[in-house]
Amino acid sequence: MKSILKITLPALMGLATLFTACQSEPEVGSNLYDKAASSNLSKLYIHDLANLGNQGALRVVNANGELNLLEDTVKFYVRLSSPLDRDLEVSVAENPSATKATSGVTVLDKGAINILTPTVTIAKGSTVSADPIKVVAQKGNALDTLKTTHGNGATTLTLNAAQGVEVASSYANMHITVNYKESNVVENGNANGLTAMDISEYFVYDNQNNALEKLYDGNLSTVWFKASNEGPFTFVIAVPENTNVSAITLEPSPRYVNWVAKSMTVETSEDWNTWTNQGQITRSDNSISSGEPFVVRFTKPVKCTYVRLSNVQPASSRYLVIGEMKVYK
Image 1 (cartoon, helix red, strand yellow):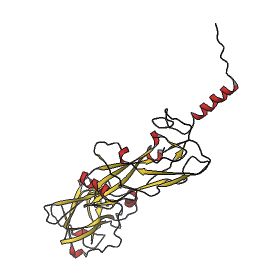
Image 2 (image 1 turned 45 degrees about the vertical axis):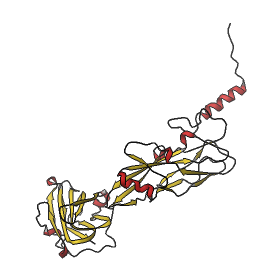
Image 3 (image 1 turned 135 degrees about the vertical axis):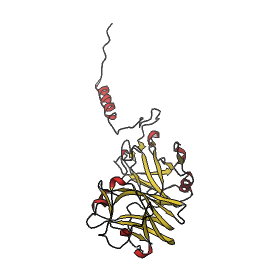
Image 4 (image 1 turned 120 degrees about the vertical axis):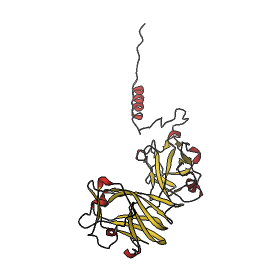
């Protein structure tokens, strides 16, 4: 016996509504609308592709035992699955317990980050907060843990419950990684505000202890140069004992402005025997093309007698050409 399936007009309208709902805000990895949801309340969630799918990152640098925070900010918006007929205030809280432990990464205690905008508003009729949540790293005991572990850290921000909506459990968190680096060298630094030492106060040598007078004779036109394929190169600068050195610059010659070094490792010593790695530094392409000096500025001045520039890589494929080396205190 054949059956005839009758589809009424209300049923067709219901199917159309279902198909429309399936084309709403995209989900990543799991359903925004939990299968076990017990109500039809609008869902509050974080879905931020700009932060690699709710994965933000901040950076800190250990400069000889002192943590320095780089100018990083994680920003993300809070969303609703459907608009409300009223304004909704939304907040987040630091929640280390929601952080998944991974190899080589330390779960940080509360206090590692500072929530600059702890509360934002989703306006009536809107589905996105008017302003983003903003988060930065914060100095303190929680972040100081990284000085012991010498590795990256992580924490999590979680949406707080809000009246009249449900938090979508699969999208309730923003995971923050704090990338840790040990370096006492400022990225893209300059020598502003520093005092250059007189050229009679220091000497420059190569790795064979040969004096390189052309690098401290006060004349940019009397250059020191070597074929690039003879590198990488090493230079040692000797200063008066226990000098507080703030920066070193490699000055280009007016005739070879783009031929100074591209990158190097910087070390210091008080006795020539024990060396402290102050960090590695690489110049930007813009700095090279504009003919600027290669500036190695320390985050914290270093008391030393010797500064060693090793693994010096040329910026040009033909020659490494340096007009002068200057020392600042």
